[in-house]
Length: 269
Image (tube, rainbow, N blue to C red; front, side):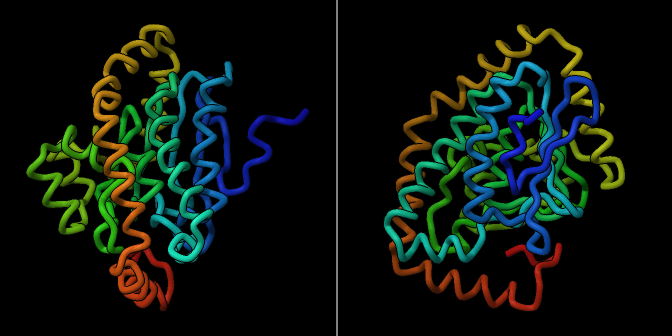
C-alpha cells in the first residue's frame, strides 16, 4: 500500500516510537543543503503531518551528522537570474514558516553540526529544539548579502532578546549548541552522542500526552509568532529584494570559494 510520504525524495521517514514520525533531511555529500526539491518538500511536509492521524509527535533531523548547511548555492544563483524561480522560492519561504507555526502536531528538532538556512527554520520553530554541544547555528543571510528574513525576524528576538538577535543576525556569528541554550535560543543542549536518543525520548513523551491539550497549548503560545506576521512579511520582502541587489553575487562568490574544497562540518558557509 502506498504511503503519503512515498513521493518525497530529499526527506526520509521512519517511526522510532509509536505515534512518532521522524523526518530526516538528506542531501548526501552536501551537508543536507536545501536544493529546490528539498525546499519544496520542507514546505508541504507539515501539512501532510498535520493531516496524518497516525502522527502524535514528530522529529526533524539531518543525515550523516549534520542538520542542514542552508540553501543550495545553485538554487540561490537561479534566484538571482530568474524572476519565476525567485517568486516561487519567496512563496515557499513564507509558507514554510506559516505551515510550521500552524501544524497542530508537537515537533522536536535534533540539531547537530551546521544548522543553517531553510533547515534552521524547522530547527528553531520546533516546539522543543535540542542542539548538540557541537552544533553550529548560523542564520547566514547577511553573509550572502541579503536581509535576515525567513524565520529570523520573528523568532530570534522572541527567544534570545533583541540585543542578542541583532548581534548574531547582523554579524552572522555562529552560535554553538551550548551558547544557544545559555541565551535561550534552543530548549536544550546535550552531548552529540545523546542527541538522537533524547529527541526520541521527548517526542515519545509528547506522543503519550493529551493531543487536545498539547495542540491548543501550542496554538496559544504560537500566537506570539502570528502576532509578528507583519514583521515577518516585511523581513521576507526585504530579503528577497536583496537577491536582485548588488551584494549577492559577491556573497555567492565568497561562499562558493569557501565551499570549493568540499562540504565539511567545519565549512558549511
